[in-house]
Image (cartoon, rainbow, N blue to C red; front, side, top):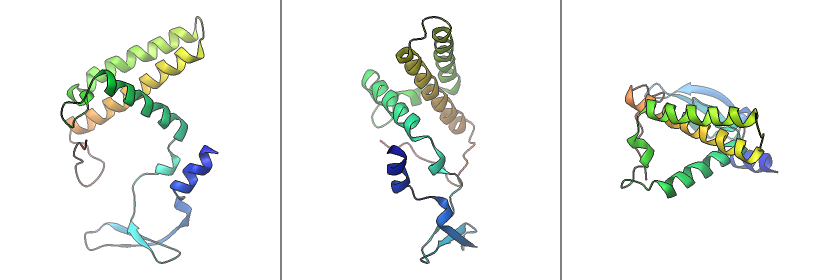
Length: 142
């Protein structure tokens, strides 16, 4: 059912046909109805929706525990390596739990926190090293 909802919200890329460069050199896609849009570089329809929903819970819990600094999430005040260190701790906790009591609820919590911290580290690395994958930098939006 969740897959059907996601499919409804994010139509598959298979419906896109054709392509032409715009005045700025950005590739434009044209669908069957003649609708035009900038070609996207990623595949958001391939992102795992159940895991992303779990991650959104972690970010929500984190914001409750560590409130925003104005419109900036608290974790933006940590650098890539601080987030990686915390991510590593959650990974080790997950592995330790797998090898001992094997409590699924604890394993899910540790694995989702590992993934959240890894994403935070990736975001910070991209920002700190000016490695933006898009043509323009993204601003922090509250």
